[in-house]
Every structure is written in C-alpha cells, then in structure tokens.
Length: 116
Image (cartoon, rainbow, N blue to C red):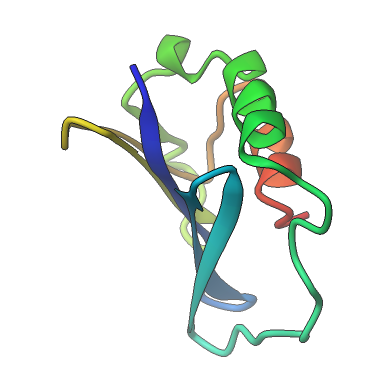
C-alpha cells in the first residue's frame, strides 16, 4: 500500500503539543507543523537530506502494522498523549493513539518524525 501522508500529534498539557504531517511531492518530503498548548517552533530546518524513499524505508522498519489501535495507562492523569494517522493513496487511513503508554518502538517513530 502506498502511503500518501503520516501525521503524528505528540505532547501534553504542560509541555505543549505539536502535530507534524509528512507528505510527499514526487521524491521530496513536505512537512506541515501545528502547535498547541504553548508548544513552539524553534525554527529548525527539518528532514534535511531526507528523501521520500529514505523516510518510507525507516517507516517500514517500525512495523506499525503490528501496533494496537490504542495504548492507555489509566493510572497516570497528566502526561503525554499521542495520535498517529497514516493516510494511503486510496484514501484509507490507519489510526493509533495513546495516553501515557506507547508501543515498544515508539521512540523510533519520534526519531523518524524528528520530534525527539
């Protein structure tokens, strides 16, 4: 299945939340950023030298198809919430989300999305 975009919303009440969407124009990456709750753009340039092929190769290595739809640790009240939306070329979407709980390789997704 061909991916047309990957959107990751990540953050919490105290540290702010960013929503980053990676989409593609030919072989190039296009990045859109939205900020909430006091999060801010530090002005850094993102995905320098990263091609569509390199990004998708890294994304494939995460095996997100094996992730559950939701991850929740109900014992923590304030913390980190996240939502991942993968949109495919045919318009279908795969959504995963969490609150204070994460898949084992979530850090790899943050690194790929340049959010950590």
